Amino acid sequence: MAWFALYLLSLLWATAGTSTQSRSSCSVPSAQEPLVNGIQVLMENSVTSSAYPNPSILIAMNLAGAYNLKAQKLLTYQLMSSDTNDLTIGQLGLTIMALTSSCRDPGNKVSILQRQMENWAPSSPNAEASAFYGPSLAILALCQKNSEATLPIAVRFAKTLLANSSPFNVDTGAMAMLALTCMYNKIPVGSEEGYRALFGQVLKATVENISTKIKDNGIIGDIYSTGLAMQALSVTPQPPKKEWNCMKTMDMILDEIKQGKFHNPMSIAQILPSLKGKTYLDVPQVTCSPDHEVQPTLPSQPGPGPTSTSNITVIYTINNQLRGVELLFNKTINVSVKSGSVLLVVLEEAQRKNPMFKFETTMTSWGLVVSSINNIAENVNHKTYWQFLSGITPLNEGVADYIPFNHEHITANFTQY
Image (tube, rainbow, N blue to C red):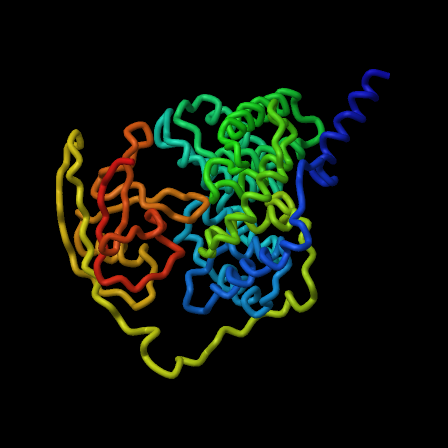
C-alpha cells in the first residue's frame, strides 16, 4: 500500500498549482475602498496611444477588474504588437503575463523566452540581487504556461540563488518567491522529491530575509517594495518564523495613499493587486468579459496641433567625480527627441551619437533602471548608483522606460547614498 500512498501524494503535488492556495491575506476596509479605486483610476488614465505600453499596468488592471475598458483594450493591442527584439527577459515575461491575464495568446513570445532562459546565466557568481529580478519574472511567466518544461530552468535558477551572497533586495526576493512558489505548487507528477526540497529551501531562506525587512509600522523594505512583498508573503508555502501582521501593513499602505505617496502609475501597479486581494499567481485564473475580446481601434487622428510630435533639444550631461573610481569624467551632449519621450529614448540617442554615453539597464519592479554609464556600474557593496536630475530635482531614480518627461536639461551623476 506504500506505493498507493506515494501515488496519492504525487497527485496532490501535481494539482496543488491549480487549486486555491492557502493565503495569509487581509482586506481593505469597505470605507477605504474608494481610496483604492481612486488610485486605480489614476493608473488607468495614464494609458494613452502615445505612452510607452506598460505590461505591469495591464496585469494590475486585469487582476483588479478594469474600469477604463478603452484603455484596457488599447494597452492589450499595443503589447500584442510589441517587438520581442526590443525587450529584456523581464519585460518579455511581464508581457506574456499581461497578455495571459487578457485571455490573449502570447504566440511565439513564450518559446522565445524559453530559449532565452535556457541560455541565461548571471554576469558573475556574486551578481547583485537586482540581476535576478528579470529572470524571476521570466520563470513565473513560463511556469504559468508550462511548468514541466520550465522545471530544469527553475532548478538551475534556484541553485544560483542559493549560491549568491549579494546583499538582499526585497523586490527581487519577492519576485523570486512568487516564481518559485508557482514551481513548488506545480511540480509535475513523477518528478524527484529533491526538486520540491530545493524550491522549499530557497523559499524558506528568502521568506526569512523578507521578514527581517518588515518594519515596526508594517512597511516591508519601503512603501514601494511592500506591494510585491505582500503578494509573496500571502502565498508562500514556507511562512516566516515571525508571524506577519498583514492588516498592520495594509493600514500603513492606506495611510500612505491618503498622503498622496502613490501617484506614479508604476507604483500603483505594484500595490494594487494586494489591495484587491490578488497576486501574480492569479494571472492564469483571470476571467475576461466578451467585450474584452474585441480588438481595439487605435486612435487615428493626428490631433489638433503638432505639439504631441514636436521635438525638443535635451542637454544631457554624464558626470563621475567620485574618488576611488578609476574613470573620472564630465561630458555633455545635445540630443533631439520627441516631446514627451521617456528617458530611455534620450539615452539611446546620446549613445548613438557618442559611444562614451554607452549605458546599461537592469530590470526592476519599477521598470528599467540605469545601472551603468560609460562602463561605470552601480555597486550595492560600495553604495554607488546613477542618479538622474533635472536641475536639482531627481528623476524617478533612473527609471528609464515608462516615465515621460519634458526636461531640457538632464544630468546623470554617479553618486553614493
